[in-house]
Image 1 (spheres, rainbow, N blue to C red):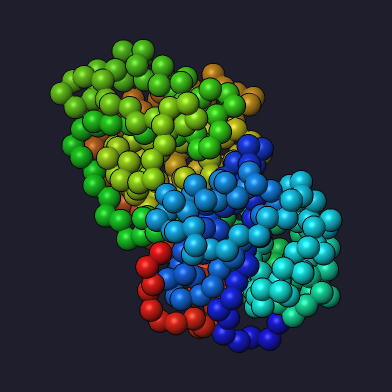
Image 2 (cartoon, rainbow, N blue to C red):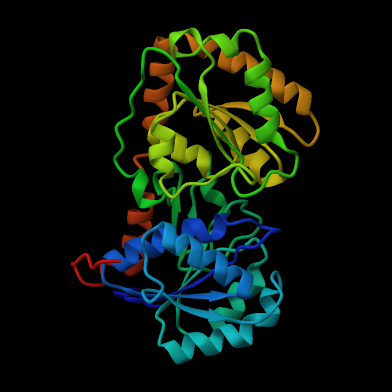
Length: 350
């Protein structure tokens, strides 16, 4: 599509028990900024489960259900080729100027088919660099992206500056307290290995950790995982904590924006790649993959927490380094690139 200002967007993403909610969460961060710019945003979703998950996240973000139109395809997740006829019909009927896709199921053929079907501005959020998409815009916020992977794309937004975090993580001011009073344990939307409970048990039963909190007692635990709790104010929860133990994923960038020193572990291949890269750039301490080395992960987390419990100077250095990685404004930058300078300058109520 020729370069022009754009104001009518469709986002193709899903969330379900198998793939969790990450695709919806990060695209919704971008959608919120497009709405702030006065743009029209719609979602195309595979099924009712994805729509329910999106509506829940919209509520958490303070976005009314009438602000984003939703098209439900009524198909099984993970068959992008089979859904293309329905998707292109929606693109035509809605008058959409641009399509943002966020899915691990798509491939190069998907973008070539869209190119042949219409003159839409095509954007893609990529994590793995498995193929070179024929898209107008590619976003890969990996800590160590490879620009050579994206020769077919018109433009590539690469690196931590483009991490599409929720609006609540913009321009935070980290606070490093003299002593550790609270520790965050989070696994995201899934916890197939019961790591939230194991991490909590580790802290409660370790003689050093259980007596190293403020006033010489055990630190409070903030556990955000299936079966424990959730919060719409994740930034506030993080900033109330002094240390964190987290599964890999975008949550690690959120911890960077909040400046909370963290140990990370992985539960899947994509988390292993991402958390490992975050470890290599010094953003977090990567403890390993719990699928194959659970006991080793627990011991590394124990050592991480023990060392930082009473060392405020170390925590301050790590907090400053983390906060320098992202300012939380990645979604704003992506939205500006998507619009090409379009949409109104106003900031409508969401």
